[in-house]
Length: 351
Figure (cartoon, rainbow, N blue to C red):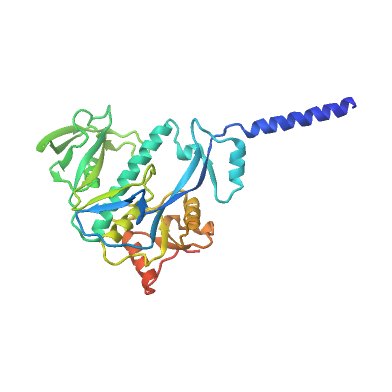
């Protein structure tokens, strides 16, 4: 073999080896794939996924499935370049920058903890939305969820404190607290009336200017608030280790269906997604393409789609799925009624 030929062979082998090695180098991307889909009207193990006590429940049929996205990768467990390239070629997989799922300086454990908390919050909001739709009274109070160390409220307000009034104004919802505080200037004092241990007491808290990008310069005290519901029934939702808020709409529909004599599915296999507020507003979610694939593969023929996700849903051209556009829980119920009876309009995602 000539010297030139040997050099070419050596270079080719070297390139091949480097290519193989390079294909297995970890990259800062996450692969999103269709995840499990679960029927809110069905069972998780031997128990109903949704269990309701304190009110009469009714038989259900059909499916009201929530859908999930499975991810591969993340800090400490990055995918390799070969996996990323294969995902880019797969229409059912999305390859996204790591920061889109795991923000910088936030641990994987913290992200998973936040997802678990969002799931619990979405279940509570779903219960409130369903009971609201059923006109079942649900008294609410505003409580302190957490207090940020180093800010004025730290050491004065506590987690679990019920906010009765702010500057003498009675409080019923969390935005009312923010509105009163925002009327002040940084450095002012805000007068809270809190209920703690069954007793009401006044608490004065100073304010400072926010350093957050979205609220920069506005007065803040350093508390995270949430609404606490006094439900007239007990609703228990069991979903295993699934996290995030995107199943809220389907939880609310499942609760509603069990509490009403008329089944809302008409026996159809319906899947969907969307966050939910206690008032029944439906919000957008991530991973819509992967969730539709999961729903279709599970057998769904109808997919409830948040309006703000419609463009991406239509762009993915989901064969075999009828996309039904929803803005509110009430609108979703109207659409399901039209599908069941054949009467009335069914809002669709515009093409």
